[in-house]
Amino acid sequence: MRGFAAIGLVSPKSPANVGGVMRAAHCYGAAMVAIESDRTHGKFFMGSPLDTPNAWKHVPTLFGELRSLIPHGCVPVAVDLVEDAIPLPSFQHPARAFYIFGPEDGTLGHRHLDWCPQRIMIPMRGCSNLAATVNVILYDRSAKADRYARGVRNSDLAQVSA
Image 1 (cartoon, rainbow, N blue to C red):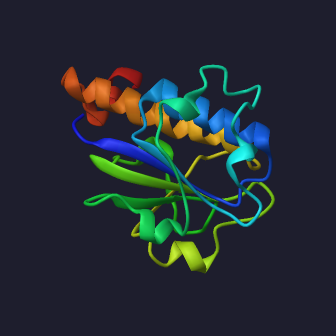
Image 2 (cartoon, rainbow, N blue to C red; image 1 turned 120 degrees about the horizontal axis):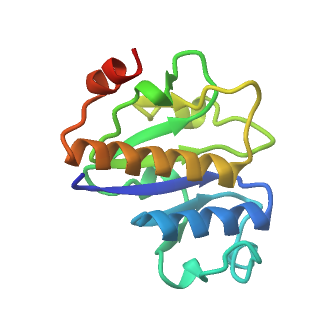
């Protein structure tokens, strides 16, 4: 898949989760991580024990209002357990996506959902850890891009499982 993925975090709760997100961004080749939060600053992730590759040295990290940090040509995609969210298995990732993740102890709310034209959710019984959710979304993007590159379509997968 051509294009890129960028990550936006809204008020992440813990340094460990930001470190885990940075590691995922590095592992899956995300173009950047942007953080909007009153409770987050540089020391929040630099040196986190979960950021074993020191991703903050390799993945651009921006701080500020996420809406003003949307990379040019990117589609903002809210990742949240909201009623109109598309389940991840049936979601087609945009070539240039800016995935917006809310805090573990809250939701994105209308302040962020209103400017995200696409909304997705991971079907599960509860909610997941922030870093784990970022990993799942980036893995799904990567796996679907790989299948697409090999010419395998979702309809082909449905025939195999039938």
